Each structure stands twice: as structure tokens, then as C-alpha cells.
Length: 442
Image 1 (cartoon, rainbow, N blue to C red):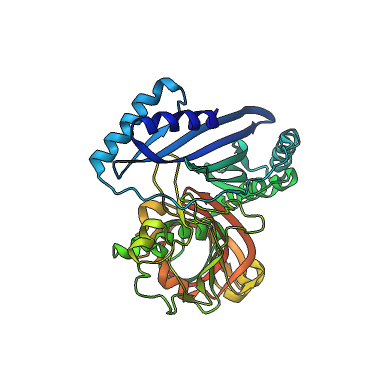
Image 2 (cartoon, rainbow, N blue to C red; image 1 turned 120 degrees about the vertical axis):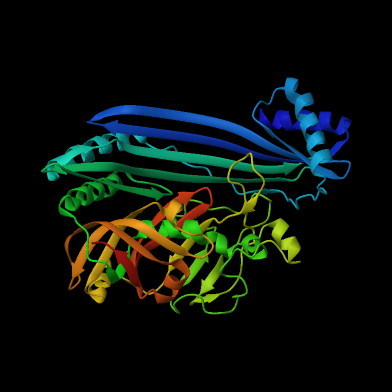
């Protein structure tokens, strides 16, 4: 259907004086499964197709987003392209496309086995944690996405992405106190037996928080969980964007070649990461992606560019022009961004810290973090540690600091990584010993 639409639309548009057509097409298939109290509550399979069309009308760029591929809509869609070109008056610059097929043949997932495992995991976790008031819906989801960029000159680039996610929310109750905790995983491929870990972790954290309380206000050595670090990376990735640098909104401005993190820290973008959930061979502007060290042993090496920002600096795009969805123009994003450093087990990380706090979750990240300055103040939950051992749960506290200062004080990281997938890209991190942070409690 898409190919017929492109062929017929191209012919009609050329007659209207619209040339140099480019078509960005997404085909997305999402399947999901939810289990509650031993029964399947919801099973869905959703397939969508959409196309973003750019064209050259009298030397200016016009565009239109299309979901209805019927010929009856051609006149309206071509009119939108022409009106956009006349109103915006942006010079049309064609993408430098080539012919390339990087799509992958994915095996069909056995969702029946996952359904069985979800039911088993729910039963076993409830038996293991009698304090659980309820184990909310356990979910599993799979996304398959095909991306095709082609023009009316016959150049066609195709790529595909596959990722899966699973998790649940647990709620525990004791003596009138209620605590909840969430845990999930995101991977390229999830084996059914892997579901038990996030479900068990959610249940354990909810139960262990039943006797939690605040700590005294002061400065504490702090280990931040992988989940918290991934959220921070997604919040502050803009500081490594050439667009933010050009706008004067980046703390990384003017710091290329200087030490911006502890000397063992690496921040690597890897579009072909083994097991990566967002692997791409080219970006949404048709530029080939490549592995790059944004931070190499603590030193800032480069910024991320799309075509528009690269033109401003008279350099090449780094292959980081991505759409947040098919409707939008390309902005700067990442494929798989991984924070690494001096690794050790979480047990050894805690022992190295000795006394302090292990923060497992934070609320209000987007409301309480300044993406320009790096300052954050987050309502947090976790555990109080003495001699490297967790002695009780901690809640009703606020942990504050500065992300960019914290990069310089990281003393070590654990060797267990987790992934957060957002519209900005995939972020991979582990628990980090962040040094001292300010804690507000009682």
C-alpha cells in the first residue's frame, strides 16, 4: 500500500510543480499482554503506518503528515505542502540519501510462554511476600518498527528496530501503612524466565518500605540506582546537543577537550550495541550512525549534531537527527547512550561507601530538575546503610545536588546495567556511588 501511494503521489505532485519529494515512513507493530490475579486482563495487537512527506515547491520546503493514503486526499495534502512552503519560506535542502537495506528478519515471539510465566511469577511472588496487599497488573510489551526513507530519484534506505519491556507495580500494607514500588526491564529480547526478577524486586521494595522513615537532614554519601541515573541521563542529554550549545543553554558549552567527569567515566553512544534496544544504521535524515565517545575518561570529546546544527558549524552531522515521532521534523537524539566507568559488584560498591544512603527511586524528576543548570531536588526512597549493609528503609526525604558536579565525584559504578527507552533514545546505566549529596529529612 505504501509503495503504491508513493508512486501515485509522486506523479500527482510533480504535475503540481512539487519536486524533490522525500518520504519518511514508519510501520509500527505493538503487541501487549497484561495479567492480573492469574488471568489475562488485556491482550492487544496494534499496527500503524504513517508517512511524513517533504517537497520542494518553488525552491521552498513544504511538508505534510499522512495517515490516509487514499488518492482522494492527494489534492488536500499537496495544497498543505504548497501553503507550508509559501508561509514558512524555508529554503529546501534535500537529504543526501543512498540505497541501503539494514532491516532485520525478526523471529515471531512466543507470547504464550510469556503469558504462562506471568501467571506463575504472580503466584510465587504473592506466596513469598505475605505482606503484599496486591500485585498490580503485570505487563509485557513488544514493539517492532520499520523505518524507510526514500526520494523520487529512486534512493531508498530501510532499517528496523525491535524492543521489549515488562514489569509491574506492587503494593504492601502493614498496620495501616501502605507502600508501593515499581520495577521493570527493557531489553531487545526478554526470555519468559527473566520476568521474575522485576516482579520480585517490586514486591521486595514495597514490603521493605513498610517500616521506612526519614533520616536527619545533612550531607550523606549516596549510591543512586540505575533507574535514577537513566532518568537523569534522559533529562540532561540535551547539554551534549549542538543545538543547546548554540542557544547558550548547555553547561558543556566551550568545554570540549576539558575534564567534565571523573577520569574513569565514559559516556558512549553506540548505535550497534550488542543487545541494544534502539540500534540504528542511519538516522532519520539518512545520515549513517557511528559509535562515539561523548566523554572519554572524563574528557568531553564532541557534541551531537543533526544536519541543521552541523550546517551552522560548517561540519558534518554525527548521525543524531531523529524524530520523536513521524509527525515531527528531526531534532537531536541518541541511539543507545551508555554510562560506564570503574565497575564492581553492587555489594562491593556498598562496602566501599560504608555508611550512607542507597536511593532506589525518585519522584518529580521532570518537575524538580533544571535541565540547563543541572540542579536537582528529588523526593526519594531507598535504604540507610551502615558498614555497607542495608539496615532499614528510608522515605520522606529529598535528595539534592547538581548533575554536572556529580559526574566529577562518581567514585564507582556497579556492573549490573539497566535500560530506559524514551522518545529521546535509549539510556543504559548502572548504580553509581555519586559521592556526597544533600539530604533533607527531619
